[in-house]
Image 1 (cartoon, helix red, strand yellow):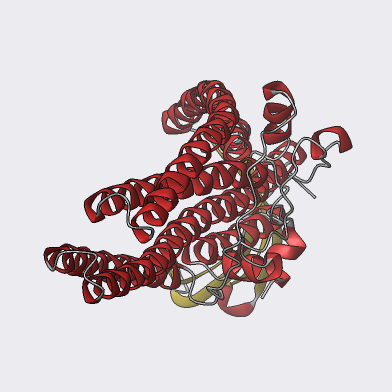
Image 2 (tube, helix red, strand yellow):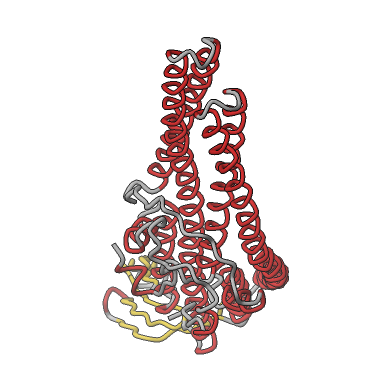
Length: 419
């Protein structure tokens, strides 16, 4: 089994986000949706094809050749005669032990590369699922927030009408309250439309995934481990890097296979001939050698160049992935801090809006001040909610990349047996 490692307990305790958090997809449903995604389905097909190709290399590509000949012997001396003759032959190349070992090594490298490609497809599909899921969560939560604000605007209009009936407010305030209510309805309709669009995108990408979630989002918590711990966990399971390394190994194995094919290739066989009108019968063995030409040398050199380039690409990829993993960890910390600041600002602005509404209900202050404070409070709440979801998404990304969110490791058995 390749690419299957165990995360250390110390690092597992670094993250406090539960894999079964209510705002995330159910793990079993997410796993089924990932295996059913188009990218993973294609990778599974390629995995099956590489498995068959590996079996062919294991068995060898040397095949029997069957031949025959017909001839007529004309005898010019006395007595003159014409005699029909014919012959049959069978032969096949002989795969030498060194070449057989090179073929088996290439078969193993191809299978390992296909397995890593399937793991990478699962991982990338997981990232796509998270992006679409949090895009829908954000639109969904905004729609609910606008709905609650719409209820407050309707209540505010009722309060204004009551004050007008009591002669405590001018009729002009009704116009302002109705305008605020109309604007709120428009914003709520637009938010509901964005939520439906986000839901449709999620269903289009993962049609089998239930689109339900708990909108009581928990407060994001700062990862307590170190960036180096997280980077090490990521590289225990990084399919992208494993795939690049496996690609280099495939090219190395191809170069070794081509090097073995630069030697002479023996052929052995046997033949039978019927000559002299059936009066003579010949049974024998034949041996031949295929002498390699310049093309095999250039093929080997090309494979070696590709292998070197793939190894260098894998080194550069590892450097980039390490930098990205560190940046992701630092982003998760920064997003948590951003949410904390946005939450404090939203609470303060919400309290200011509450006090302004209370003062207006007691006959103090103006409706304009109430509407301004309520608008500022709503903007702060939207920003805080966005920051909260950004922090939760960043935290979920950390868990996904370190394989603590959903099962993303594969082996040959799971690749063939998974529904």
